Image 1: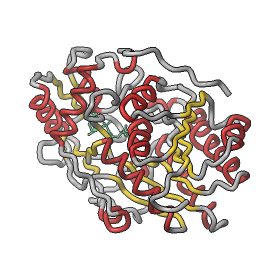
Image 2: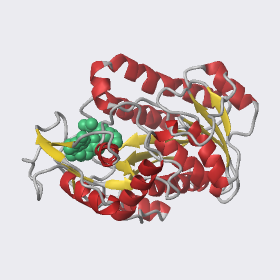
Image 3: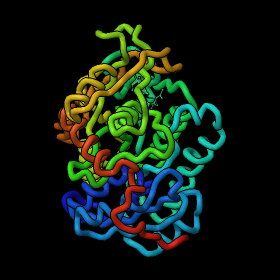
Image 4: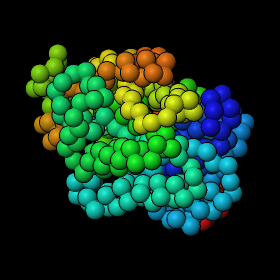
Amino acid sequence: MSEGRNVKILITGGCGYIGSHTILRLLEAGHDITVIDNLTNSLPESLLRVEKLTGREVSFVEGDIADTSCLQKIFDQGNIEAVIHFAGFKAVGESVAQPLSYYRNNVSGTLNLLETMDAYGIRNLVFSSSATVYGTNPDMPLKEDLPLQATNPYGRTKQHVEQILTDLQAADARWRIALLRYFNPVGAHPSGLIGEDPQGPPNNLFPFVTQVAVGHRDRVHVFGNDYVTPDGTGVRDYIHVMDLAAGHAAALNFLAEHQGLHTWNLGTGRGYSVLEIIQAFEAASGTTIPYELVDRRPGDAPISLADPSRALYDLGWKASETLEDMCADAWRWQQNNPDGYRTKTSLPGEGPPC
Ligand code: UD1
């Protein structure tokens, strides 16, 4: 793998929110993309729309990373040089209720992927981690070398996989690994054709707000207004999903030139409160977002903010989209697709089952 050259990349979980935006970015950079996705929480319609936007084809396999023979079939077709690993469960509350399924899917699934990659000599990996690994550490802004202390099973699956990858790279220097810790990804591609499509009630603030704006839900519940923050509501580092996508492309380029394991925060370094998000979204959408103050959500930190300076220094990457862009793009997506990808403009493509 060398920088600037077209690379054939396997994207696990590529039909999902961050995966689909990243694929679009990588296709635009000239890379070739194969996706493996079991469609648990996503629809293949997202890939059709990426193909429409880019005029390029994506090779899609409906399958699971826990299925070794499925991965083998993909790798046997040859030339995959790098993997970007998004596949995994991500709902905090569900992870508390069903920890075994989270450890099985997120940790065991990853082990299977790594073993199969290793057997094929594919040792370039970008891993989709999360700022959730910092837990409720109050040491703001959060730097990559802080101790990790995830507070729920979902977060611990990310932390465990980071540790597994660290041990793997220490044992075999041929592995080149990037751990990307996302802060709060929001927004959508500016075309309004792809975006976030939660299955069931959204757990996260931004998609909840957009669903209230479009009339699917009555009001936003604001979880707590007694935090030690300027207006008492929780503060987060929201990052536009297209900036995040660019971060993956930058990390991949970096791995082409550098050995080792590298960890980067992908955030803006700037925080907004829940009430600021509601106001900004009202301004961008011209709607009124009714809200109600309710109790804190257990496990929520008052503030979460990235120190993104390492990514700037190493990768030359910096988020550039504003909160106004995030709101305008999320609104365009939601308005054009009130029912997400079920608001079909074309029939979903069926990938060959494994
Ligand atoms: C949450 C997860 C985190 C995960 C991330 C993925 C928890 C505790 N944390 O982060 O592990 O990596 O999503 O994107 O679930 N809020 C409301 N009303 C809502 C929803 C949220 O007031 O209906 C508030 C929250 O209290 C928080 C802010 O909005 O202050 C952002 O919440 P959310 O979008 O869920 O993200 P995180 O909690 O940061």
